[in-house]
Length: 485
Image 1 (spheres, rainbow, N blue to C red):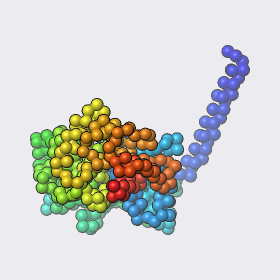
Image 2 (cartoon, rainbow, N blue to C red; image 1 turned 30 degrees about the vertical axis):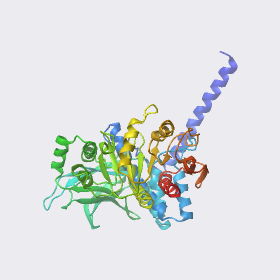
Image 3 (cartoon, rainbow, N blue to C red; image 1 turned 180 degrees about the vertical axis):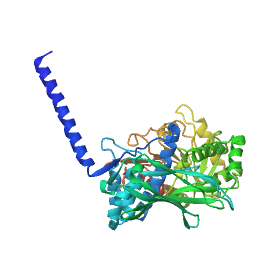
Image 4 (tube, rainbow, N blue to C red; image 1 turned 90 degrees about the horizontal axis):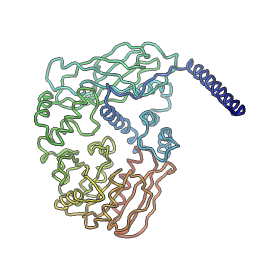
């Protein structure tokens, strides 16, 4: 080997060893000031499907206060909220679909908790990093008795930093909040903060209750006062065992399949249903889909020409003038589209534009528009006004080419959202206005461009990339655009 190359190699190895030594020394010094809790976003008892379902539920719960903060904030506080969310954006990527759970939690906490709470922020950090998984995650309605045993698993999600001097034993409480807002302590015990590193279990029984949604909160008695986590929903359901048995023996519809799958995750693993819909509303949709008057309505896709798939209608407006058909992304459930605080923006769009909003998955192919044509034909029979189609993700990538090849499809406007390549050229031959809603890291505010008129109108709007703010703003952009047609 060349002596010069050998010498250079040894110099590199020596530099690497010195770098590792410096890093280890720095980490050791830092560890004397604070304890690092290794609360990784783990997989609850294995299974990629369960991991994704758990993450989806957490995402919805952590997004809700951020969107509520955005709605309540003025311009200055909105800018601060965006800066907090920016901490979760990887500058090496041009876009980021989901922000880390930690970033969402810190952004909402920084907004909702006043500056005088600064001494308690390390404890909020700790609470943010823990999820309460209640197993089973729902309980049976009853008028008396103790009720079934429930395990509350305090499950670690990510690393949390707590000053070393704060280590020790704390009073840990679980607090029930009834549907009417009354509070009661479910359990109170002493626990060492260090136990939070791996999580631990607490054991409770459900309250006597009629059907309804209760909430459970974790409360810590710290040296600087009481601090509370966000509440998790625990639903009280009428005749829960009979419901499970009925779903097992007769669950052959898309609604029953979805309900059984989510109920199994909830009862066996404490993975909450990531939806604004309750178990009771799902049951009502399943048993009497034509009579349900709830805000979120699930039904068999066969009703809109797409058999064996699940569709969701956000609002029950039989006299609405038009319809907005939302084709969801490949890995997205139509139920999850209207989750949490986002549902308010969709509902506002429906009311302002006089629309029924449906969401589902239609098989799409550039070579065949058969499934899409059948779905649109079914909607056309039951709609007196315009039909707008919104394609998300992969659906949005295919729709322009499909529409260009099939200009006879009854579509009054096309909307593309969260679609890769949203800034590229559209195919020729599109016979309706097109809106493309994209996001970009450099956009501090909405950036819009427009060309053409009437059927040739093409509009592109770039939103700030901070999800969920951009996702919330997108519905407002869509509303304004439809109203301008």
